[in-house]
Length: 126
Image (cartoon, rainbow, N blue to C red; front, side, top):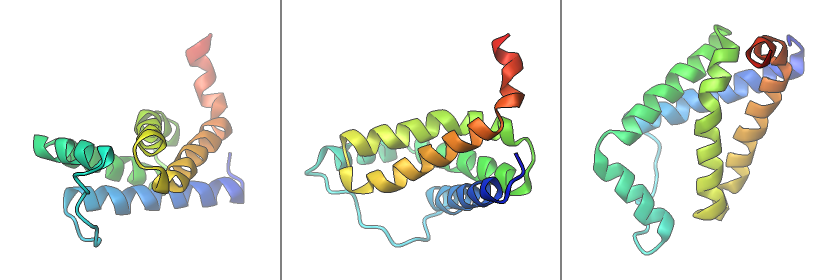
């Protein structure tokens, strides 16, 4: 659980979540406006129009990323991240193929860390 490999993945995932989650709350990274001629652009515009989806997901990502970086409740943070990472993957798989590499990295990192912490999840299944 505490190997250097696991530590690097945990820190990389935590940093990515904090940076991109904070960007959802208060945009500071340069991004192009979604192309409304694509399904992905229309979907993102619809989510943005709600006014709450991106800030809520951003806050969750920052909290989860912080938990990973501070090594507090890592197993809990990984379970919270699982549905978010699967949705990121599905969005890129079905609507925005160019971003698939980053989505796959997030899912793979999350999966590796869940595997490494599997002992903490075992009581849930017995």
